[in-house]
Image (cartoon, rainbow, N blue to C red; front, side):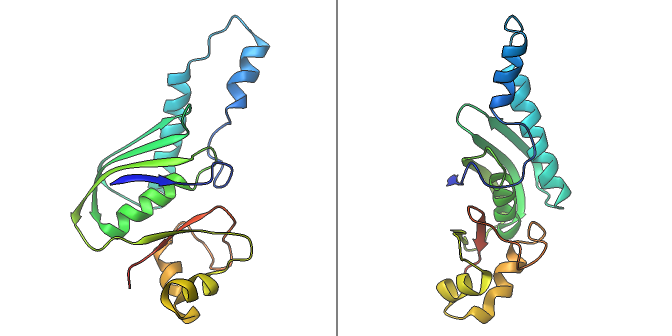
Length: 165
């Protein structure tokens, strides 16, 4: 458990930006902006994205705080790999800077490392860095599916799960 950091301007675009409420307020300055409702919409969008990826946890709860760009994820994951995929799926979302990990695990295992992709990275280079062999790039790809659809489709700012050896 803890806080994971992500690049706020990278990731899946699941919901509007902070500019949307400001624009709405300019359109009708007297109309109040319901921040709680906007946070709920964003949290629900992230929870839906996690579910669409086929990642399940018992009593999964996802809450978004737009002021701090933080997602809090709680519930019980069946295993460590699923927990890590849920955290990465929640964090690799545009306008998310931190994920507060409140998940527990039914069957604990060694925790993975996380790698933030930089320009010029590919899975081969990342595997060489962590495992000493680029040929182990499929281990990283498998740890990040279904979020990764292709080993060639990574982008700067994306956070990847790097399983323990």
